[in-house]
Length: 186
View 1 (tube, rainbow, N blue to C red):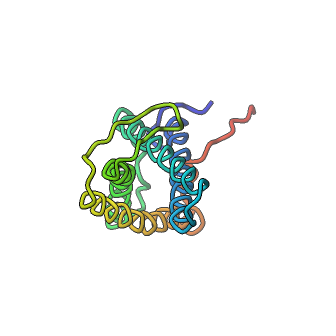
View 2: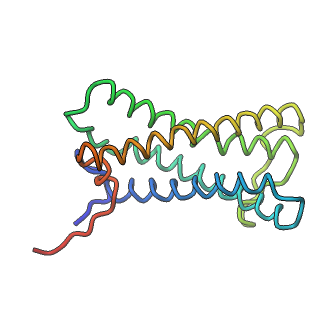
């Protein structure tokens, strides 16, 4: 039976669930963000913005939960056959991904606050503004948000490419240990 917690050689179903939920959410938020900025002003555009912001705040909560989950669980070791520079690259990429997963929604929150828009997550929770209304703060936060977007694109290409390299070229277990397994009775 698959374990909810991580083991020395496999991510548990808790970490897998958070990984794939956050991955799907990030992909959705990125596509939504890219599309919505090019739409003409309309009710649909405002609805898309509201949904994008709600998804961003949800992702922030899930990332905080994921960081806590990773902190209280063991982390499966990387394969022994990897050269030291690849281990360093993997660890650096993961740390940067975690940083961007936190900075992206926080910068969006600052953009929203600086524009003095209400932030109502899925029409359920009203979140107060974190900064006063300010064009300068909003412009800086927008620059951070856009820069983080492109940083995400680059890191995600590397992360996904690395996982596929492990699976198809190195033929090790790195990708499979983040995929759900189906236990079969013998």
